[in-house]
Image (cartoon, rainbow over all chains, first blue to last red; front, side):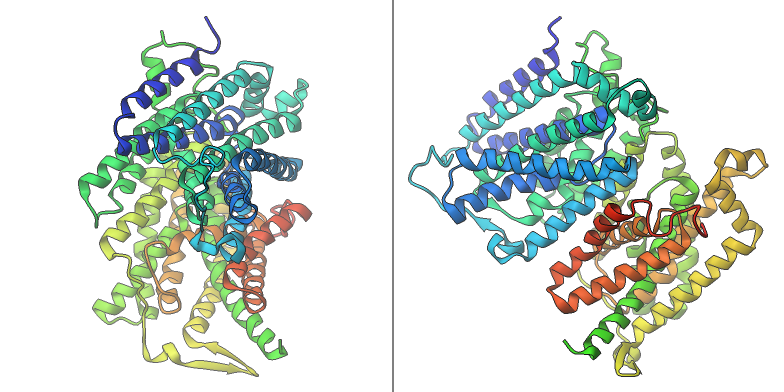
Length: 332
Length: 293
């Protein structure tokens, strides 16, 4: 069986959904949002689900992507062709620095989560206070004449096509990594770091690889966000809420599966949208209340997530790299 | 900047620090005993603040008296939280535990938003505008009362944890769960009480803080983050560390507020956390090196 099946099947499904949404700008917008969040959740889960490193600071990398693109455009008139790679490099360097600092002392579990949260909060608060980055109001990117160079399209579908490509690339890269030696090292480190190290797994190196790959993919998501919406602000690109959403989608979809977080996002974002429109204005919080209850219930009753549950129900589904986390497994 | 302004910042930083310590001590107690980090800790503070506000607005109770009502309510909430969510959460992986308490935090915030709306509410009394002169610097009365209550309660907690059998049991479970169980300690009961007290302490902080700070549904998240920072800066699970961490965070924030803008000052606790991680990752007063809670 082709080892890329777990990347091919979800990509094809997403492409089919993209095709269905082509006719309607509203649905296309939901598709873009869902695919973007789903993809960076997949990137987040390479760390959390596969390596056992729970980051609550991933908004930092998303924000780096978004702000490098936005400030590059507004401040220097740089096109995405220049700013996207710049954002990726900056995110990689940042992840390397934070990773070195955190892993030097073997920070794991809650401590790692809160340490990463601290970094993203510093960035959030500093950007909110910086006049040339638009403070908490954010920045609008001006329209350019060379629309293609600046990825400025009148219609929504080119952005949908871009995010579809981003989703497919992320899945393929992810699947390549988790089904290679790297992925086995990651899972060994997740399940028992001490034992893995004793057997010769270079813990520091492979945790850093997970962190940098995850951060780089997340920063591409942020860069895409800025190019698509031509607007960035601290709350939507650097806030804790974003990082928490990645965790929510991953838990609900299934941490042990590459495509689990995608499933989580594909269920929750349209559901949230549905609830929001059904309840109307004034009941702004209802979708979040539903989110929260669903999250708590699933985290307790279905620790392997909906994807993991589907897999145990239908074992004929393709082997998707890595076992689902079972009840009682120690993820430290 | 004159010396008086600096002195003023130091004093208000220290009073804030005392209040922060009271909030963080519950979090560290729960973590020390149960190894669970409660991301909804601040939301229980938010509920306690609403409790104090409602008691004042509808029953005309002074916040100091409202504490007597709010503490048992919060204690019961803590026990209820343990029985309904935390006990089952202790059987699932750590990331799922995080998801459960994060979910609870969101749930409580948005339920509060539906019930209380987004209005900022504050208890306003005669003494709200009163203040004490301490030498050349000024201390607002509501703040002084909250800080004093925090100090008293922290002393009380310390005595309970160090001098009573109950405290001994708590410390035993936090040092070695299995060892404590083998000695005949009822672990489930200890957890229940740790959670009850951890949340119950917020019942003291909440009503008193409702006359210092505006309460709104999202105020808790801010304090959860600050409490995390304090607990890690001080050394996770350490009682003395919480005091030191809280004072440091309070003073650093307040002095930075004088020197720079409010937004930069808000980043100071997190910068402090990163600094401590760089220089002294086990925290300033790690467990094992001093008194532990």
